[in-house]
Image (spheres, rainbow, N blue to C red):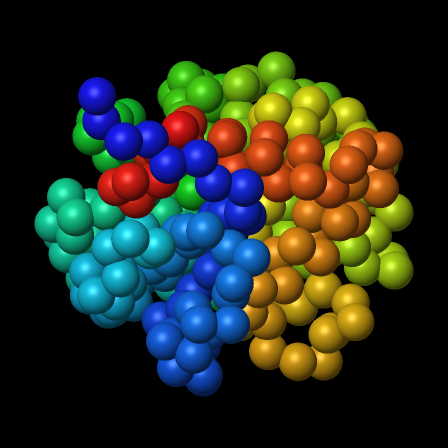
Length: 261
Ligand SMILES: [Zn+2]
């Protein structure tokens, strides 16, 4: 019989350890309550860096490869590398649409997102999607492609209306710092509609630190503060939130060897 290890810790499903100022080894050391983490790339060089970093910590870190909507205008020079790196990644992304900052033309963002959707479907890996002020277009592209059941909506900030619509597409919602922000009432009203077994938690390190760390660089150990906010929203024991969200993370990403239940 294979040995099965049952763990009770958190899974940080989205932390850019390769982009943090503090050394990843220190952040890993401090992340005592976190069993394992997903390290998303945002372009070819950060995806390569994620793959290299994760190869040094295969028991705790899993890499992804993708091109962020902010850099979608560089699609032509980036895409071949992303496709090649995807072989070594557990998921495709971070990609998506960002109409709040609009750092790349929206047409390029949609084209970039469409290619990631097709790649995720082709290789059978989850799609990590960033969606900021672009709910309608993200919804349409996911719905038209049928990629919903393998889509992770990272740092989900939708209110009740969009949360309900995306729920019907079969997506997984990953919650980050904003669900714990003082100004996060809309996010919490959306989260209240999400069945816990369809949710995961993340920090988006080094960004979006939850209170009481708002002005600091975020780090994986603080993912429990996101979990605590969800525990309040769902009136659920925080240990159960950790078990349920970690189980979903395993279903979506598989988890590092030896961590499967
Ligand atoms: Zn991110």
